[in-house]
Length: 140
Image 1 (cartoon, rainbow, N blue to C red):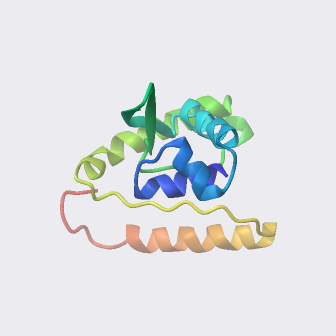
Image 2 (cartoon, rainbow, N blue to C red):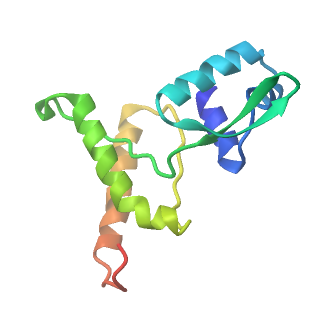
């Protein structure tokens, strides 16, 4: 549900009512998941509008990039390491974000461990191919 909410909000901001109607779920259920995403700082209120006596909140995504990685047991506090990696990634991505030239994709899949290893090997090979290209400017 949360991943679907994040994907929907990639296109435009929406209210809990709009999200609930899209999912055909109760507003209370969607509101709970939106609240969890707000607490995790993946969503924020981007605008409000007054509807009769209440203020309706429109939610939008906060980050433009997500970094998901593994932390080895020797890294110490896993949360601290992931937070540090996240800050580092955000600071390096800031210029592309400001220029609206930052792209990312998040997909959740369930695959056997052998295929996960193959996936990472292919991904690292692709990254290695691009790292070896000659520099084409000052932009990282």
